Length: 462
Image (cartoon, rainbow, N blue to C red; front, side, top):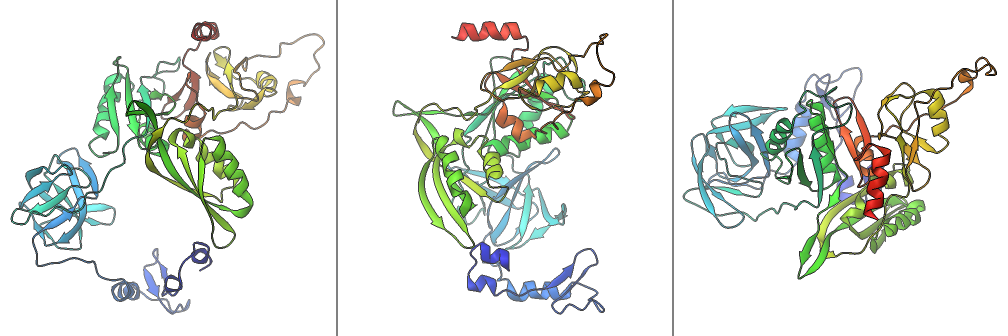
């Protein structure tokens, strides 16, 4: 009840029936009695039937369904998923696919599935109001309408947001390449990325000038990080670049994607959130107080300003803030800004991190690794407290001398390293850095591992 009130629920929404239930034990009741609990879920099912309105659909009418999701199967190909608006469908029934551009294609429902828990069950007939999965139609996407041949009436098209961020996925070429992954070659990487297009329709994959790298574009950081995490869990090993915003030229002017950002934050943090957003080129367009001490802030912010902002906002509000964003449109480029104000601590040599070397390095900034971790030259081991990058020797040992006191190594105390998640790593890496992704490790590194070659590249760039 308190949560509903905090969310601004109406009186009608607050006046809802309450039922006590145990999914584990399989009982539900409106009058809870711990000594005599119900033995089934009948009361909950009756409450659903009596309280929740029936779907707005027509049984005795020609078939019509809007595709709201796409699934994929290695044997049957693409599977269209959606709720039947009217009529019914049978196995083998001929269909017409109404595309968003006005084209019409013929198809047939080869197999029908209904959902049974987390799995799908094959069926021969499905009626209006039910959610059905239809296989047998190859060229189908979210937003298409499936109709009966004798009544072709497309439903309003659901527009799919275009990609706004792109990253480069490439074969891992670090000194530790091939130690963790099961799929490590460019062929493995290419097949997996293009296979993702069968079910992930907002994704774009393009070949590059080299066969070792591919450009992958998605809706945002979360969209791309979910793909990276899935591939990592499947045994793939690769490396990715930092996210880059996709620009467009409109009427001869360079334009960038602008998002409408909505942030619900406690009143005491509104100033902090506004300062952080404005530093990222955001424009405050609305500020509305809500219930229970919360304020809703609306910004128009460049998509590149959102990179890393979600975690920053959660830290600033101690996990109490909620943000959502949606693409507004493309507008003229707002100019350069640097969301990153600190450099990297870069390993000087190959080896294993030692307490003595880490103790000296932690004075320069925040470490990402502890003692006993394998590192290589050019690997990022921490965040510098200043803007520039610094090379540190985390493998340095305290060599024995005649004057060294016994037990001096044990006196060294290390600050616990910061554990970086996948999203935090993607937010941290700069243009000259990469993220090495393996099933067991996330390692940030410089594109050019050798310090001398990096210095020459910087000098040539200037």
